[in-house]
Image (tube, rainbow, N blue to C red):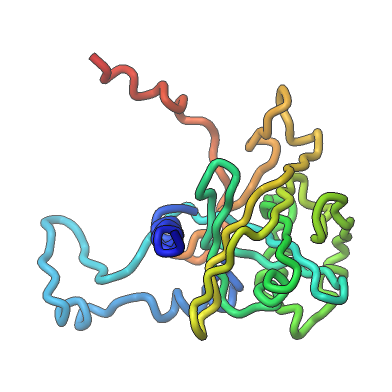
Length: 237
């Protein structure tokens, strides 16, 4: 079962929307990820007509700007941004984390909240992904953001994020010297009424941002371009 789950998470990290994105790590990856033409030639990759070979460079998009909220063993809140994660079952989320304060907190408390960075809080969310609580223990307060303790789990709700999933850790799969994979179960989702339409979460109102690792930058989510399980019906005979 564990091998199956590892494969599942690896596939997830390579196919969906964490080393969750502390932005400094993202910058380093962007700086070192570009293959030179000499490296491409050394790999003996055959060219494709009218296309540019870029070497063994992964480009998976969009990547979410997930905000993971935790408490440490003394009840101090923390939040960090993660990009390598997504849904991996009906009520489960998965993400990869390198060594962070959040990683330590998850091992200790086994509970966390998961929110989305939005267009309204780009600067604050980016700060949470850039600065470590190991260096700035009160980094949440530094932005003026506030916290409410969840009534369902031992984890902080960041008041300024309008959508929050309350989660319990199902499994942590350790990667020796390189962080871990985390599988979490969503036990409850809370939403500000301002982002709902007919009782459903409305992305036009939530205005989540996504992480563009290629540039690197944050981007907005666009409008509806077609109906799911509907747009392709014209090809069904």
